[in-house]
Length: 277
Image (tube, rainbow, N blue to C red; front, side, top):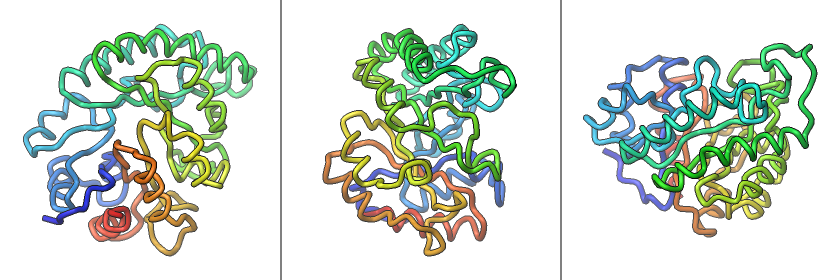
């Protein structure tokens, strides 16, 4: 088993290895994680947490419980508040019961009918107000149970693949997502900062880490362009960014969330080693 420095705690996002590439079983993914020195996976449904615990692993970012693509219907649209809030509250309770730290959250798509681009758009101001109102409905339970709700910023520029970018997602402006989090004003509502999405939408990643370190609750990494391996075929220089995170006192996890294009184990080994600053 690899011995990591653990200045940066690393996790592996399950969908990348269950829906793409070699499509490992959950048991296989757990074995790989342990072999590479990682003690956690992410986005694993609660029904499978027994498997993680059998391997001595944890789920450091829980799904939000929404059916289908979970980033489509979100807090920006009051028409979905009932369903989103209900799913989030259940996920927060399950996460707390399991002793895990975080639940993912999304703004949702910008259309009135989230699945119909012709249905009209929600304004930025309405998105802000609706997200704040919705997140406040779950923040109290999150505070009580000690679970972080991590609102994710995603890119809308890459429409080549359903998991490389999300055209229509309203939280594609990092400043908007950060403003939502700060306006909620809860110690348990945080920003999910993804190097890949930030690089595509804004660039200047190191400065944006510094500007938002006070609200960053979780981090994801992937190579750009392509959301693939963290190798020399992509443009992000990960080690100095991770050293900056560490220097600023970040204590959370950095999740490997990229789509493998070659030998999955070797690519993941390289990525984990690169991020072990």
